[in-house]
Length: 223
Ligand SMILES: Nc1ncnc2c1ncn2[C@@H]1O[C@H](COP(=O)(O)OP(=O)(O)OP(=O)(O)O)[C@@H](O)[C@H]1O
Ligand SMILES: Nc1nc2c(ncn2[C@@H]2O[C@H](COP(=O)(O)O)[C@@H](O)[C@H]2O)c(=O)[nH]1
Image 1 (cartoon, protein in one colour):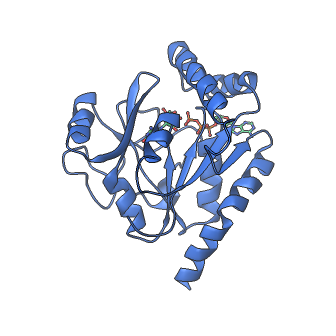
Image 2 (image 1 turned 90 degrees about the vertical axis):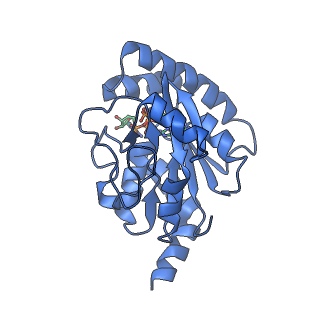
């Protein structure tokens, strides 16, 4: 896999990954490409099935979305929404670089979703849970690993509740996963940077600071 160094953004559900990503992609249009994941979860209102340049042959159709269309609304994200069966079929065929079970649903990153972004010399952004992050470490992708963490469990729960996207069951599963994630993120060397997303402006400034070298490389290459 070639192109600028990808970025893995991980951290508990509700920590603010998508919020920060939206800002980044808006400020640096034409620099980043989002790796559109596959999931078996149901679409939230406003979420549409990913549409793009290439198709993952046996799945529902993939992959790269124009930056402006990605993460366009506050609570919606773009995925390829597939059945568990279709997703398993793709996994069995080796079409995924990583996959995980999270909060009762399957999630995964197809190889083609990354390749599509890299073919355009964009910085490929992957938004994955902690299991995905661990599995990506076993590959040759060589991304920058960033963890977005909430200031506390209490604040995380409030953010997830206020977002109004989860059932009580799903919310509890996400909080359980968050406890594990928050513990692991404290281990030295797991991430290149851990950002506590308390004040959004400060968190965004830190995110930019860790990525600015790669951003400038892409911008220079475009000149
Ligand atoms: N610094 C912040 N201060 C207050 N609220 C925030 C902050 N960052 C994000 N939020 C809010 O918290 C909620 C969760 O954020 P977001 O959806 O970006 O999390 P996420 O990490 O992408 O979650 P998921 O992994 O489930 O997609 C959103 O409603 C968002 O507006
Ligand atoms: N391992 C993977 N995790 C993924 C992928 N795409 C998203 N995610 C993570 O799932 C949770 C929940 O997302 P939501 O959209 O249902 O709120 C979140 O923490 C994401 O980081 C993936 O391809 N692989």
